[in-house]
Amino acid sequence: MLFALICKDKPENLQVRLDTRPEHIAFLERLNGEKKLAFAGPFLDADGKPNGSLVVVEAPDLAAAEALSAADPYAKAGLFESVEIRQWNWTFNKPASA
Image (tube, rainbow, N blue to C red; front, side):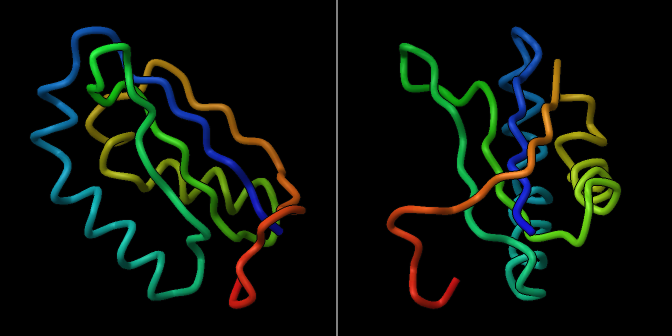
């Protein structure tokens, strides 16, 4: 089943995000290779700078989704002020390969 990881960055932590981005990208690439990543991308502020993340993962249950979220290098670096994990149903415009 799919879970949306809705992550909000701590204020004034753009540099943490930038410094940790290579490890975060490698983490997402690994999830993608394991067929656990549906899609991902940053939320942007009014100036177009990233200030959070939306990551949708495939996991058997909430506990597994929580474990994936905790393994994200951004989470390990303390970037996020909050992370909400919600089960999600992809209804419209779902790619045929998903």
